[in-house]
Length: 415
Image 1: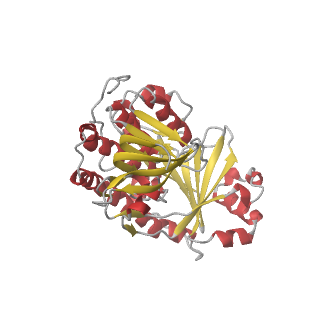
Image 2: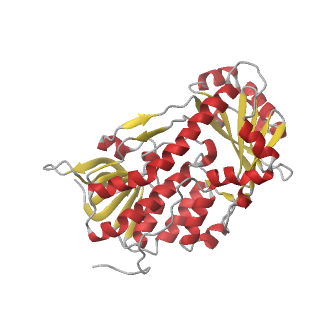
Image 3: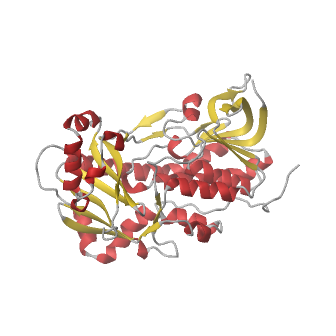
């Protein structure tokens, strides 16, 4: 059976939602154990965009200056290249306050930063190389009362007043809890790879669209993290065409990369992200709650997934931290988290599905045609004063959260 640990909250998954929720609950004096199945946070193809809404959370926690001391780059404006014409789409400088840019930072740096700052709170323990395997249920009521897990020292049991699944789109917690999933679907997949960067490269153009191709270039300082869109399930056709054809399509999508596509030696240098968009119809049952990608898998369109997950974490801490500390969390409290966060999730997912179907799917279709830029984007490009609206939608969202969870003095101990 292994040793048994008793906590007030067990968080499964050390991604953005899990790490920030752990930080906030530790800050509030809630006895919390966070399980992360990997030994570190070094996963190459994770979201790198830290939007103004997340930067504001860092500011509210008094962490922004330390956070921005980490290596990062800033996106002040957003443009896209469509059939060789540059469209100016968003001006983040029009967002009020200090956090009026998008920070590009490897996600592992962001997670390591939160983990290091969380060490000041003795009620939070982060267990690396520890994977949840199943939920523990009360045999009398069926309520979830903990987690079975496997760590570096073998199996263990964690008894918890609440289990929070932050373990991503393939969530063990949501599968074990039997929470129903609504599949919204996606007509696209994404191929990720990296190419070297030159000082003369233009950094404000993230999207490159043309007939049958779309490429996104994300600035990671000394190299480009690139993503190209293909039809859902089309990876075998891409591989069958060969690496030379793939290099040629990249060079055609973004001409400035044509002198370095040879860095892709084989398809071993290209990783597949199977895009899915879904959400739980119920985010909780007694004793267990899912948030972030475990509750709603997002498309990479707009790079908003990490920021929605962080907003979920803030809302969860705001609504539950004091009740967890007091031992009074009820099912109705868990449902309040879903009600609070469902509307912004629905809005963004509907926008992503629309972009999939009306923009990306036509782009990667085989029928030759001239791409038509939607009228709203043409207006934003023509009138600079309008560029604050898409910046607000992408950077801040439709329901930004602010930190209202309680705070205990760092270093305080509890009997």
